[in-house]
Length: 74
Image 1 (cartoon, rainbow, N blue to C red):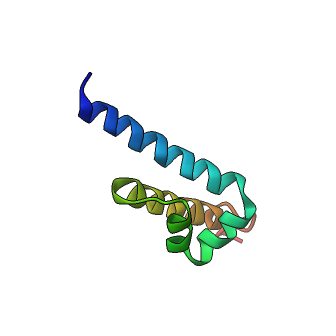
Image 2: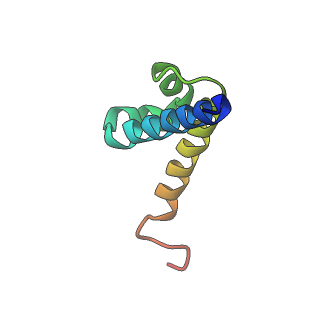
Image 3: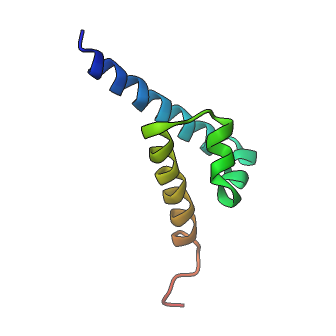
């Protein structure tokens, strides 16, 4: 078994699990919007997983603003 492959798989699972927890927990979503660092600390993220989840949080926040019912044309 390739150790790097297993490590990458573990990191991917950690990233997906963290994003799932944030999406499913309203308290984490609210905290992520105001203080993403504390959420990542709470979830024990570091390294690549921390950067990926930070990017994911940003994506969630941006998509929330883009999907508001009132578009730029109104």
